[in-house]
Length: 257
Ligand code: ADP
Ligand code: MG
Image (cartoon, rainbow, N blue to C red):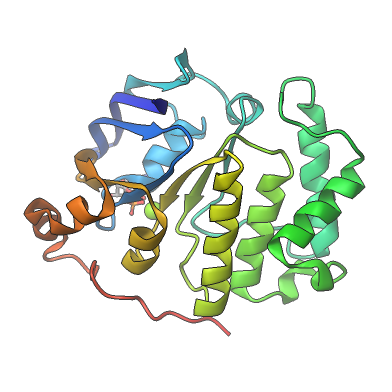
């Protein structure tokens, strides 16, 4: 059963067809992977799904509800959380202050967020910090964290709201292997509790090891979808990646700090 349905979505920027009749579905309860060469429209699709961009055509449904014209706050209130390709945390606030800001935002939607747990915002912040393993850095200024730790913090801030689906835009970029496997284990643990994920990622080992289903984008459309093995073996996928700066079958050894 699909949680998110994308139907013939079009988004043009001047002459650039970022989304060009994009149709795909993300399964409820699954870790869905979304891959594709640079510029294939993955981030634009996330922007459309979360209300940051209004499409020029087509529709997005969340569990049967048409959310195409929703604002970001309204999509968020429906239980859709996201991270950004360029991590957005408040650099001058401490780790725990970042979570309190997230909790306040969530508090504003408490009536609408059905899965909001009981207990204070403070308790929830502590719970989430423990979960991602940043408790010892709670009092640290976020700007002093490594890039990977900032990504974990952004993830923690999303978790505060207990979204039913979390969209992650390149969570592995610039994250060292240790933090990366930690992040993967946190995604799996949340997924085991029922949270659906859509993960955009260039790191193929990460995607293929983590995702139950993978959808491949190319030039603003869905090229194919299937389980990781099917997608990996699909000649269309290899062809789509040819001539791009991406190396789909290799591990990107990027490490920051
Ligand atoms: P991906 O995330 O798959 O790398 P994007 O969704 O970021 O791809 O971009 C898809 C295409 O749309 C690219 O050609 C990109 O340059 C273009 N694009 C994305 N956002 C904008 C924008 N705000 N203005 C103009 N062009 C954009
Ligand atoms: Mg992108």
